Length: 325
Image (cartoon, rainbow, N blue to C red; front, side):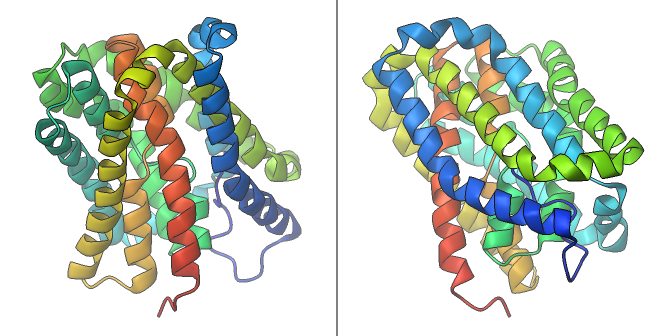
């Protein structure tokens, strides 16, 4: 996965961690370009890729397994040492983005399928690239890792409940089945990766530099599969979806940062909350939307997968040039 877990608590990175940082830095720079290229190809020539739809969830499981491999038990120490910033961040994650999704769907008068898709993106946990974007933005990486990990582990509970409450206004939501799917797609692979990292840490350390590229390939694959399955709908309502996604992501980044500023958190933590709130696990949202709503409902998540990595790279470049004190 594209992550910086394991680097947050060290002043001088170990060789494996330093290699992981370099690889992740390159991956997060190339990532938006690969996503854009994959989405464009799938949009222009969808037929060869429409058969990939059944492989979306296995692709997501690969991403989540990679995330688990990058985690270590000390990465969760932030939750114990400084529970308040983590708690505030996770509450903001599961409060701001779902309500923003509902508000944007209402303001833009989106059709039911697109409205449910936008809201489901907001109900998803933190995005898998948020740790690297936080690192490049000179944010609080330890807080970012803790927030991503906690929100991911809480997703089987909060994502279905929020989807039932908010997206249920537009489409029927089977919250129980959705929760079971999230356990299978997210929780089991993450815990399995964490267990393997604990049992054979030296072996995992050798493959850490490759993990960002595995995540990039898997996320690109998911985007291609989702876009190809809904290419006609994207061409019909593309600008409306793009507007909804830009508003959702941009307001999430801004409100997340603003909330942290109101709470007088340090500047690095403000940047972290902005990134964590604004960047969603849109790949998971796309898979759930296709399975429980419709192919059209997966469109906002597919577009979000592209846009939030582009905006994240731009925000990181801007903040990196400004003092974090």
